[in-house]
Image (cartoon, rainbow, N blue to C red):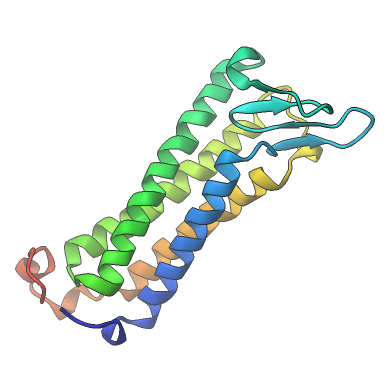
Length: 177
């Protein structure tokens, strides 16, 4: 087992960005500030609930405005969250525990999948006809930044991968090189 000092700097940078992207996506996923109006009637809407100016919250499943698009957004963002968890686990294992190329490939791929699903979910949310783009708020922005961060992390992992270092068998071997 190799120590942290043998981990390439691009992998460490990718690991840090992966963790930050996961945290940002998690905050955006669970908070109710994808949309917010701060006028006479303060209202904020998230993926899962809508709250009025009295802080009375209602589940989004009770509201049927473009429910198909909202449901698709919820599904995409949920799948992105699962992919972020897998990306963090793979990045942690590859960076600090086991230096397997197969784990490296899975970690890079899950970053790409997480970022892509998160960004597609955000784009889909913007297509809901009742969404005013000037009312998008920090939860939405966190998910967008997390998606971009995951794509950057994927690029860093790909740049750090040197397949010429090992034979094809060693790249996909379950043993530590």
